[in-house]
Length: 296
Image (cartoon, rainbow, N blue to C red):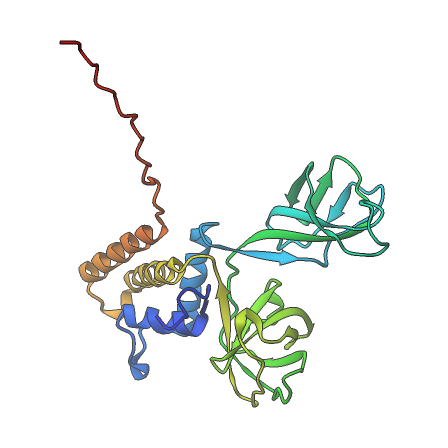
């Protein structure tokens, strides 16, 4: 697969190409499935995967402790908060005024995620200060492959304008979202300022900022914690596309062959979701028994 194994991401372009290869749909002049159908299959795959695939993020801007405040509102994309740390300063611990000492993990809090709200509630108040939040987020459903409608002429530019095909809208994305430009630099989208314009952070995920011309390819990036994601999506999407083939009566397809292929891809997708539940157990060390000495 074309994604960088171990880097923790796959591009939508790569996934679409691999899915077409898996289902024998590589001849552009005679497509069995449209791009929209493959996008739908990928979205279905991610929806079926649930929280099997996720990524861990750190945020240091969305929670600033205030004296006497017990409840704080967080962005909805912070799905599963794991750790909250606060920066300890004078006068918490006697050091020079204003000097940053370190961070401490906060206890006594609970997250409440409900439709339209995402709250962190503490059972005690904390001194005012900055925090770091470590949270999990399911792999976000990608938009579609796009192109730049205006050049990015500087490596310090903080916005990009896209040409988006069909009826898709950049407002559909969740933050933070990632896009790869020219199969090289990855940018993180932090806000949408116009129907096709986004605020970006440059050189994300270990890449280097670079200029790009108008018309350059822009591919959504799926950030994940497990390299099984690509294998799962390819097989799950292939099974879904074969189901679409079976439902379409005017394609003249081999029903038995497509049904067999669909079942095979489904089995491979389930295998990709499985995790090893049995870990090797360490051997118990048996104390050496002393031989009883007999007097002769």
